[in-house]
Image (cartoon, rainbow, N blue to C red; front, side, top):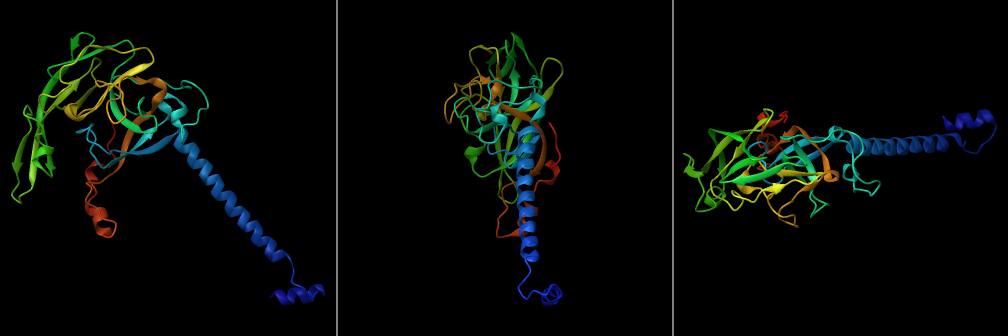
Length: 285
């Protein structure tokens, strides 16, 4: 075909149009890939981003192995809304502010390169305290009702009964595996917002001082009250988070889009499906 075209033009040399078309095609693909990357960055920065749950501090609301989408728009944007946290501006731009009971993803003041997830308990100006495992907000005890125990499989006895004052109990299943039963409560905040928490008995933060939440900051706690290093503890690497500044908020937890129990193996594709916790996919907060 190329030879016939050459003969029609009277020129025996190869025509340049084919390499040029290939160059245009390559340029088109590169432009498409760059545009797709820019769109992905904008989507992740301004609209929604994925996040996974690596620890059990939000059990029973969230489990280790849950993957969720975090909405960026409800609270506006700060430097931590963007990949690599560029120092583009101070504070937050646009949007509202978290309310009590919201579950948020944020950066710890002590480790701003790491993302965490907790529940908002105290707003700026609130006074928060724990007394014998019960939450006190602005001098009033928060309503708490005991419900059915939280049941979960565990690998070792220490994963269930971690201290002498623990009220969790360990039982053996028929197949020899271990099952942990932990007291579960429904906590209801002023305004009617309610959620489930775990309280496994005495722990170091069951009774605290009264915390006065500064302006521009929030007091956050995990739903697994005895296994959460949260605002009850001083902000330090690998430890608590203290009061969380407003501009450290990344976004609001939206919905679980995937969940796995951790038994999947890359070399066994079937396990990718058997490990999935299908009943958790699609759960919102």
